[in-house]
Image (cartoon, rainbow, N blue to C red):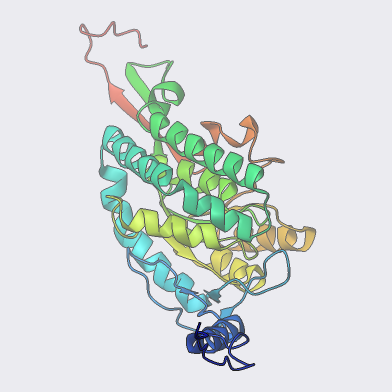
Length: 325
């Protein structure tokens, strides 16, 4: 029988790899070496997202010390621009019905719910555990809806008909103080911000907000929610940057009617007291230790930025019991 001839096999044939494998390895190595494009966040003024006038930015770090993003380093000029936008918006916002303000705040709460996963992710980037981040986002949404409900109720609770010793009716009602500057809590990225912004605008004020220096990502996303809601432009203006650079411009600006400052140091409190007395500005320092707890949600925080307006109305004798009320 004739033997079947077999084709000799090259010794290197078995060790030979497909040509594309070497290319894949090179691509994978390049991907590992590639630096991701870092996002640049803008500030929020008058319903728009301009870049900071200063042209500067800073990079907050994550739990591992790596930079998270390019965050605008706001300036005194940004504060001034925000006050102009807030002053322009205050008339329309204050004159809206309380029910309409409640509707708008409720819609914002719906949108916060829809973007809850993004807020959780950003809080995690700032070092929070997933469990804590989820709890903080839930608390922030509940807090916002809480104040939405109070928009058309606090007047009924805190206004009054006062006794007089003459033939007059005497009524006291709450009115918004105007433009409010807010230095948001520095230890919280979302719940502290929401808990201080909501009562200010629920009462008909407009706000110039300085976000937490160390936890700015949720604040900028919160501004994106406001921008896509039906909240009028200028009602909330949000600046990011260094607390040491922005606190004094906030308290010294003559067209800001009140300042709410969370977590001031001893030196900051001394400066705030001095400057507030100089320009007759109301200063509010919230006495809240934990914004996650019920102490951070109270209708009395609405009253912190309200003025009491008292009206006298004469009673015609013979129609209202002329002996007075």
